[in-house]
Amino acid sequence: MNKIFRYTKIVPMHKLIKYPILLSLLIANSTMMKAQTMKNLSLDEAIELGMQHSKQLAIANSKVAVMQARVAQIKNMLIPSVNASINYTRISDNVEPFKVQFSPTAQPISLNPQILDQSYNRLGVQSGLFSGFRAINTLKSTQYLEKASQLDAEKDKAEIRLNIINAYYNYFKLIASKQILEENLQRFDHRLTDTKLLFNQGIALQNDVLKLELNKASLQQNIADVQGAIDIAAFNLDLMLGLPTETNIKLNETLNKPTHTIAQTDDLIIEALQNRLEIKANQYRQQASKKAIAISKSMYYPVINVGANYDYNLPNQRVFPQENAFKGTWFAGITASYNLVNLYSAKDLVREQKANYQQTISLNALSEDAIKMDVNANASAYHTALQKISLANKSIDQATENQRIMQTRYANQIATLTDLLEADALFSQAQLNLINANADAEIAYAKLQKSIGK
Image 1: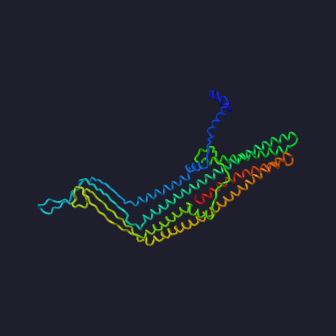
Image 2: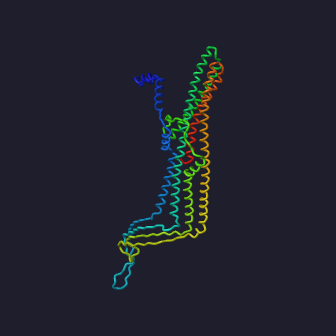
Image 3: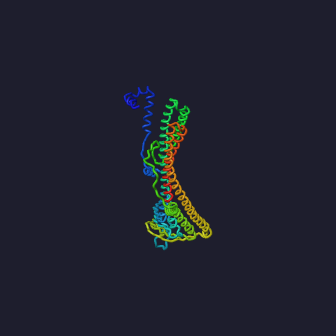
């Protein structure tokens, strides 16, 4: 193949087109070179990449940003309102002013002098003085919800981390399974070669050759199925980590029996109830719901506002008679209002908010029960996974010895080919069980760590 591509470098393209096979090989090779992107990746690197490119985490962070913006908006509502207005008006000159003469010798006085250029300017300040503590309780409630959303984002990080670990080790299991099957296929090739030689010598039966060929074809089909699962898992893992989907990931991990030690289940449950972010987030939501009750009770109180305005007008309406000059005047005041209907209608809103508060308490208790069950199940799963590893190691030893015995007996014509193939199958299955047990133990430990809030 290399000689062919060295030759194509000196062949002009218009001549190369005459050799369609050569051209197709060149295109296929360039496509493969472009498609195959190898990336060595450890578990920690995979987790870091997944966190950086997680769409779920981006959504959670957006929710936090929304709550932060709401808190800022409510704080802005507590700031006094400052308004400024500037107005200029030109009026027509076709109105005769109304004049009054108080004595025959005095000059007449115009009661409505015609000031053609008029300007009305005002600077005003208004602020809520009291509204039944609605504003401050609304701010505190929203701040509690903001903290809950931040904890939700942290909880999503833990879920994303677990999903990456799960996908990473499942991909590892598929790769290792394919390697074991390919080693088994090589063993089949050797056995098939030896059996054909024995058949040619009249020692083995043709049925033995056919049986080996049939088992080899079945094994090749299994390898193809595993490869299909690997392609799907690799595609999904690339998407999860934000990598191009044609990236071929090489895992830099070795799986041995986990050495993690865990505490007693009761101690783990206590730790989980102290650490789990759901509990803390629910407590903040519970506080927010409690503030919602106080907000609803604010309807029982009057609303008091204060304000002040400064006018700089031409003419100033407070000056009589009007003068063609700017005059500055001001006023300040306080207003109180009360909706008497609230005495009747507010109680239903208060009742609703109290029901919501009780609901948050029940949801928190339900969440605690779910956490206890989660911790207990994950601790049990981890212990079971460790037991499976011990059993798988014993099975490896037994299957290795069984395969050695059967191979010796088959060579001495004491055992049948079926016995030898069964021993091979038991050995391969023991290898697969050990790989799956080690990977499942790591996944189980990661689930347990998440369930206790680590």
